[in-house]
Image (cartoon, rainbow, N blue to C red):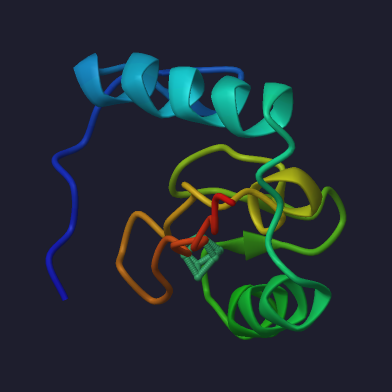
Length: 94
Ligand code: SF4
């Protein structure tokens, strides 16, 4: 699995150009309520629970610095190591 290049961290969050884009996508997901179904969120969290980069005490990914309760619920989120991917929500317009 391909790893992201090491970046300096502030409060555990790596700071590189992709961080800003990821935060914008997360904000958009929250604003437009693009949350994944519960079973997808649980599937993602189960993968994180078995990952060497997961910190149980804070439920935080030490690779990307994200709080997993939030990250696993957002449709645009993806694991930085590609252990799980984003979730495409089909919107049917009538
Ligand atoms: S997001 Fe990926 S790297 Fe981070 S804890 Fe979950 S599985 Fe591990």
